[in-house]
Structure formats: structure tokens, C-alpha cells
Image (cartoon, rainbow, N blue to C red; front, side, top):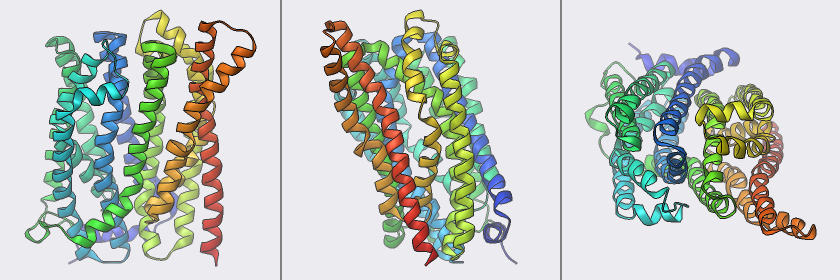
Length: 466
């Protein structure tokens, strides 16, 4: 008798691509949208319950959360891609061993990150752009998040595994459980128990613990093709190395994003103060909603592309990529329209501070002007990860995050300031133009990285056609 997972995996190589992408991506999109809505609701609660400085504190804490996510993706994305490839090769024994590696590696890495983070938390946050007014909020939030870091790692790792096993709806359910519990606990902890940002962090950790229990009930089912059993609880050197090689792209992407945010935070504080930092946080949370939809599309594409690559069905693989890229471009095009047409209304969702609302309008229009290109770039990077081309995926992710953006973030403020100096502007105007240079570095980087992705894809298609 064949197990459920084997039958579900087989459809990846036979069902129509449009139907498959809808089936696998829709649960992921619902889950990602729910997760992003949680982040918005969380920010609204914090913004209205703790003030604008608390939002700035969370913006400072974001790079450290990106570091935690980087180590989680190092294990989870690599392992889930490997599972999809193994299933495409019908190598069910090795696919089962990946599960044990996911748990063990997540426990080890999350423990190291937690210890290091707690010991050096204050100097890390200062390095990330915290000041005397924002440090208390960032510190209180991250302290709780770090204590629950092991749950975060396991939660994301097992969710990736569920999608690659052919259980996108179960993965979606785990996320919705976490989001629902989180949203219910937020007002209780923040307002009812007057815990402030600590309450928001505690709600996050408790919700993930509930989701992990849900996931464990699925992986304890012996009828699943991949499940917990005695033979998987040891590290497999080859699986670990291959997982790390594939997971290196999202790992470096998250680390690079952390570095970029640190550089941008420091430049924003330098030229615009805490108000500019809070503006950046609001814009990030707005665009994050739609970026998560694209991530949901990517998660739906990943097992389809990985399976068909492993089965040498390249035309099906490319069809899945094309359809995903089109959908992602439409989603991020909507961000462009909203950001250009309604920045004031979007900002007022997060805060009633008139100064902060006014300061966010122009930057939102600048940052959103290139968003219609970002969806294509995100899908292309994930495509290379899904077929195990770690080197190309790493390079592509670094183009947007490091190779283009960091130099531009440092260079454009100087160029804009020199232009203002030529106009005999005063010190205040020089700072204003320098701040504009920081804002414009993001859309310029997005445009250059999208062009790079297009060129790389052109040559990949030529190689596959040979």
C-alpha cells in the first residue's frame, strides 16, 4: 500500500502547471497574507499603545530578527528543497532522513544564536542604529524573542517541510493558527496587562509554540511518507552539507538584508533622526504585506520546480517559473499604485502623529516607484534556489542587497548633498537632500538587480535548450 505522501508528490510531475501552482501557492499565499496582516496589526497595536518611538525601536530590532530568520532559512529552505528533489528522484529514504536533520540542526543553531544574542544584545542594538530613546523598546522586544528563538526556528523549518511533502494546506493551517493566537493575545498583553512591546513579543512566541504542537501532530502520523521515527534522529553528513549549500542563498540574503537595514538605519538616523527611522518602518510594513504574497507564490512554486528539475522535466519547470513571475509582477505592481496614489492614508493606519505622517509621504512614493520590478527579481532568485543552483541564487540575492544597495546608500547622499551645495543651500537643506539620497538608493538598486536577474535568466534558458 502506497503512503499518502508518495501519491501527493507524484502529482508535481503530471498535473497541469496552472492548477498545481494554484493548489500549492494559494494556501501559502493565504498563510503569508495572514502572517503579514499580523505584522500590520502588531505594529498598529504598538504604534497606538506605545507611541512612535516604539515603532522606531522595532525598526532597530528588525535586523536582529533578520539574523534569526537567516539561520532558520539556512536549515529550513535548504532541507525543503532537498526533500522536493529527493521525491522527484523517488529517493524516499533520503527524503525521510531530512526531517531528523531539520529538527537537530534547528535546535543547535537556534541555541547558539540565542546565547550570543542575549549576551551582546545591547551593543548589537546600538550598532544597528538604536539611540537612548529607542534602545529600551528594541531591547525589551528582542529579549523575549531570543528566549523563544528555538520555537521560531522549528516552526518555520517544519512548515517548509510540509509544503515540499505535498501538504500546502497543513502548512497554511499552522500559520493561521499562529497568526490567530498572536492577534488574540496582542491586545491582552499590550493593553490589558500593560506589558507594552514585551507583550507583543510574548504573544509571538506563545503563538508559535501552539503552531509547533500542531505541526508535531502531523509528523507523528506513521501513515505519512515523511514522519518521526527511530532511524532519523542523527545528523547525516551528506544531507546536512547539501541542505546548507542550497540554504546558503536565503541565509546570505537574510544576512545581507540585515546588513543593508543596519546601514540604512544609521544613514536615516544621521540625516533624518528617529522620525525618518519610524517612516522607514511604516513603509517596510506596508510593502511587507505584498512581498509576503510573492513569498507565498514562491513557496508554491518551489516544490513544483524542484520536483520537475529532479525529474528532468525542464519545460514544466520553466512554465511554473513564468506563471509565478507574471503573478508576482502583478502583485508588486499594485504596491506601486497604492504607494504613489495613497501614501497619506496608508501611513495614518499606523499612526496619528501628524509630523510622522507628513514625513512618510514622500519617502513612500520614492520607495514604491520601482516595486513593479521587485516581484520578478524575487521569483528569479527563488527559482535558482529551488533547482539547487546555490551559487547563482546567492549572487542574485546579493546584487540587490549588497552589491548595489549598500554602495548606493553611502554614495547617493553625498552626491545629492553636493548638488544642494551647488545651489548655495543651508545646512538644513543639505541634510534634506542627503536624506533624499538614502531614499533613492533603494529604487535604483531594485532596478539594477531586476536587470541582472533578467540577463542571468536569459543565459540559463539558452543552456537548458542545448
